[in-house]
Amino acid sequence: MEIKREQYIKRLAEQRRNGFIKVITGLRRVGKSYILNRLFYRYLINEGIASDHIIQVELDRRENKKLRDPDRLYEYIIASVVDKEEYVVLLDEIQLVPEFEDVLNSLLHYENLDIYVTGSNSRFLSSDIITEFRGRSREIHVLPLTWMEFLEVYQGDSAKAWEEYYTYGGLPQVVLAGSRKEKEDILDELYQLVYIKDIVERNRIENPENLSELISVLASQTGSLTNTERIANTFTSVKKKRMSDVTINRYIGFLENAFLIKAATRYDIKGRKHIGALRKYYFEDTGLRNVRLGFMQTEVSHLMEAIVFNELRYRGYSLRVGVVEMNYTNEKGSRAKKQLEVDFLASHHDRNFYIQCTLSLKDAEKRQQEERPFLLIKDSYRKIIIVEDDIIPHNDENGIFIVSIRDFLEKRENLEI
Image 1 (cartoon, rainbow, N blue to C red):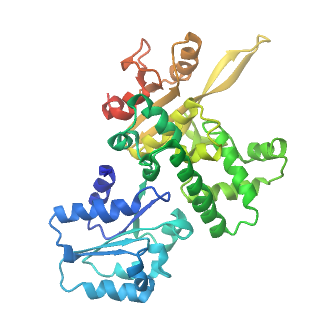
Image 2: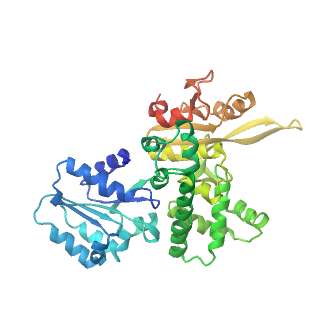
């Protein structure tokens, strides 16, 4: 069963012949090789590129073992270029080649080569791309399947589709697995043997138990503002362990660099500036988050927020946690101030939206709570509340757009109205 992943083919196509190395990144098993070797290769053929002008090397295949030698790989590619026409170079699992950075930078000297690569594990992370390719690369980051991509291949009971998606996430291998037991086993294996092992080996972590505990803390705090000091206090009070702010900050950096989590920083909406060290951390895949907690803390509101966060990233938006200040009268009758939170300020070029996520607005007090920060914001950016309830999208009396999570994920026009 094929997952089309059209958005990534479009992004790769937009980067054609730009003189940069196109680097496809993402979590392990997210589908990078499939996109490069099958979908993009097919796109190139359909665009009229002759197969003998596509130099394709899958470096994890046994028959290509000799090409893991950097000099042999370089010589093989150059020997394949027999005229001055365009050649497209597709190199999968490039991290298996020692000195791959030098090979790729050397290939850039050939103007008729259009280069695309994928990489996995501890030697091919975001910071590597920035430092090793010296500003000569463009990154195409692949996320787990979106809700719409999930629906392309989901064959279960449609009434249970949403629950399955927020519980087991969007890694293709997991989505295509048959039983729930099989899905859980795959996620557990990926978490234990792939992600943690890679991070520990790359960063030479001497106490992997602390890293694992930190992931548990971040998983349990999905959707909540936190910082290294609060996490350190959690270790002391709950885990009965001591972990310094410096170590926690380093470990979080490792997790972000391995694409396991992504942070959203706080932003003062009225003051138009970033504030403080508090931030929210979201897992790129809800299944990996849930398996770390033994599927015991699957609060739909938090998982829905994470899914919205990653969906908006997929659509090209940058996201921040909005903060707006409110004046009020306290119990003593004195004037006071407090900060209210807006889940996301989403920005893309000249488009900006404020977004709140909640399970339901049926309760009047809950509706007031969700709308209050919006009513304090005086700019004209669109304000949206996403709910799990199955409702008809509409603007309420305050001009706030109310939409169900499924309508939001399935109909992009709901963000454009």
